[in-house]
Length: 68
Image (tube, rainbow, N blue to C red; front, side, top):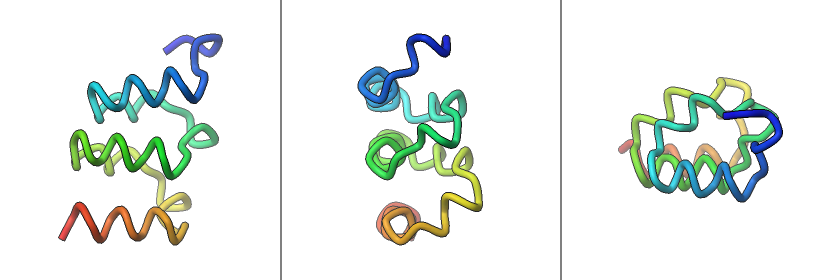
């Protein structure tokens, strides 16, 4: 994705269509909502979430919900 087109709305639309698009999202743009939608669409998207981001309580809930 082009930096100019990486708005949260566009990122959200992209990961709703293909969760694996999360691999192209910069860490500072990965909100819990974007991660949730990506993982809902494809649980394998979780592999693109950094360990630092996984510490967040909201992300832990997503992991528990979709990966167990």
